[in-house]
Image (cartoon, rainbow, N blue to C red):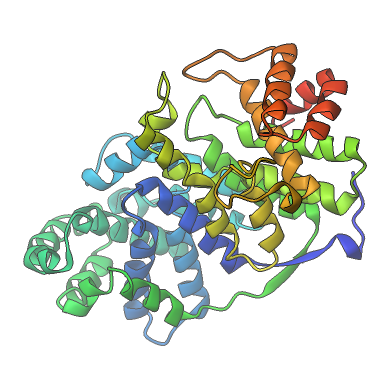
Length: 417
């Protein structure tokens, strides 16, 4: 096991990471970017009313768990079901998936029980062998989540006109889906227009900023940072069977190429993290475009081209991730200057940026896609040389990969091993 010195430690703010994860998860809504934030807002208001003295730990846990409650959802198809149906038989699947993701992450494992039970009916949850805290927060998130499913398609004035109907619907499930005290609190709070208006931007951003729940910075090593990055990757890679473990393969291959190139440990660590994180923005791409069995039209390509900029916007809000954010978002930049989203020119592309671009193309070609079968190493090499000739990839990096073709192929296909 690699030994980490003080130089390998970095400071991270877990609240910033939770917010970044939440922004990434909200991309799944495509045109509805605030589901997680609305659920957090409503859940915290209910908790504040139940505990007027202000239990900071309770509010912080409620906020974080609410922001991440749908971490088991990567598909736009599943998201549409979540916001269009109040309850359904398979709701537990994404809860179990989210619990599995967080339970394996040391930094966020404490939130896993709330994710697991955020669709458990109160009449079942109340009798389970769980702490009162887990039951209360989980059901509070469930309540807020289902309220949001009833509000999501309404403009502010329409929501006011429909608020009584929403309140009546929730009231019918008092004691069955939802804890009686939580329903009573909601019915009290939702009499105010302020409760509903706060759910719309920019007011919801103001609300979350003013909550100002502190989070202490933690000093962690690269292994722990890699664990957090791989959580992001797991969520993205789950979007489609055609992209399963793509981020893992890019991460392993990028690091391997960096080592072949003679880069130091710090640079290789950055490559590994950027590989995990480079495709976060693809969660905003509708499933039917990502899985299209044929060439993209001009509109679909424009939608795809947003993803690297979305990746940049998500990562740049994490203090200390500025360099990784730029590197991860640069995987479609080219030496010709015709790449996207920054149109960086050859002189502006770092060695790391050139490596991540080659690793991304190589790994993608090694996997099946709806429009083609996975390619053999020699076929991949030829494609890379062709792209280098068109100045779409760096020729030096491509030659390095070609000289170590089999090893690079193994790295690209190593996935979670």
